[in-house]
Length: 127
View 1: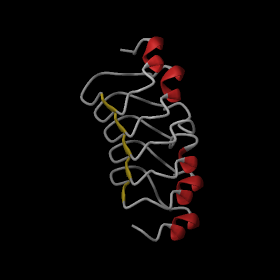
View 2: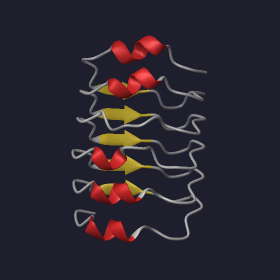
View 3: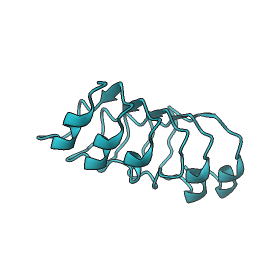
View 4: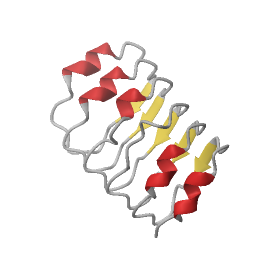
């Protein structure tokens, strides 16, 4: 299942809860929701998330229980991000730019295929 392209025109949207569905893809236009603070896409069938770099207000990103093999592009540019849940995916690596999210206080990466974390994660002193 996919969301309509017009979803990205909901410019005043602050919270989006789409957990426990069967979403397989997201429209690129959705990544322009600059005022979005909470994005819950847990328990879907997503394999990739488009770049998040335009979601400057995002504070909570919940992506656990999907089929992600890579972390979303642009995640390191989200300065307000304080919660990231990526548990129960198929991540073999984690993007080094996640180490730039200095506001992170809650990071969950359990139940993936990780063998090492980037040294940049040492800068995440609020965890």
